Image (cartoon, rainbow, N blue to C red; front, side, top):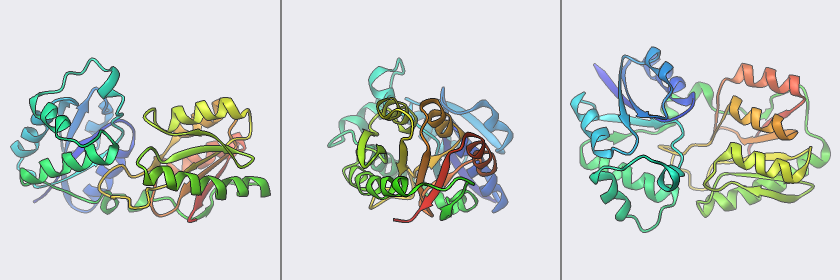
Length: 269
């Protein structure tokens, strides 16, 4: 029996991963990070164990208790939890944080990966279980970007790749070839709201993978929450890197974008 441990954060991505893994013949055991993971995840997996997101030792113990040797991480775990949360990390989490050279996303996630490996748990490439939700290339909506919006996509791509290389974020909001906002610790949706308010209507959102993206974690993803943030501020185009990002709820996302008059583009650079 093939077992897969699904370390699940916020959002719909863990559900999509569970569906694909089960289709591949895995028994899926979710380690649902509390309070982030959606309660409805239990309907998509074979077993579920809720563990406080700050209790890294308990997360590892739970994975080992189920006899899991292979795992995947999916879903948002905001780094803001380190700064403004009432969540108290356990001793193993504290030791891990103090061992870091910095608190960039890559440093934290690589340290977690190494700790899992020490315990005999291999973290797998998330794209092994997300082929059905990878972003296709091309214009995906009825509305196509205008000539000027294509210029913004090309301009934003270069900026987004650079902030990705520096491990700052993966999204930029631009208008008329000027940067309105750069994603940092707040995440994509709040960066869209901030940049959109500064731009007024007509902002272009560009989201990419990092130049040396580790496909085991932090793979860029967009979904209905991203679209909602765009609608709130009147943003008009979402450009997402094709084949290297995850596109959740595809049919609904495209239908709602068409209603709102928003262009979605799978862009390869």
